[in-house]
Length: 277
Image 1 (cartoon, rainbow, N blue to C red):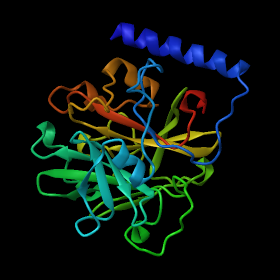
Image 2 (image 1 turned 180 degrees about the horizontal axis):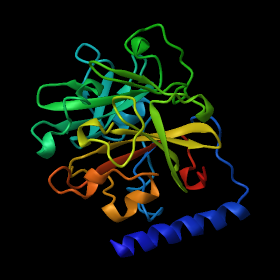
Image 3 (image 1 turned 90 degrees about the vertical axis):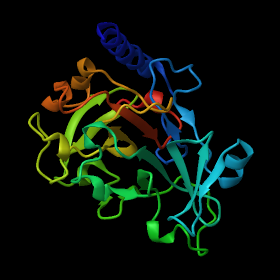
């Protein structure tokens, strides 16, 4: 873990220096959909762009998992992996992204308090983020313009989070964390709406984080208190969590309350390596 910590610190310095000399600025529009942060930017699994049209997804081997008659959207997965589920609208344009976690996980994840953010789909709980109005996803009256979207709405069976596009407009539900280059300024949440601090109950930890750069939302992610096997997921150790929280929850270091963490960074622009908060 000490090696991982050293590499993360070095990477932050490296990218900070690269930024000073680079003329490449991130497009302020959401012009991509990338997942999975990694130390090595040349690893094809890291910062991987996902298809943003149904046609492209099919051409790259993604398979229909469920359609608009079953769920809100036409959902596609690659090689049976439900860590990254693409949600397409009725015209085959990207409308959101979801992740499914199996039931009966250790530590009763997801807890009853956060289950309203998920949808119970029988064998799994699925959490979904929409980049457009969820009501419009299965409608035929849609714009054909190709964009990733202009909204971020986390919608479950009993709770909906409408995320501010500008950092200054965030409400008190979100607690500011730390800046980490190649990610952004993190925001976390206590599901009951109070400030997230080191004494938060594990059951109240909202499994969603936000990423802001230059005051604009251009990423977000999942943080599951579960050891999930997909290569899409990242698994930060306890010794690096202080880089992302102002007050790191104590439960992370209590083996009776939590185990290995599985996170997934989801980027909405094409140059996350130039995210400097």
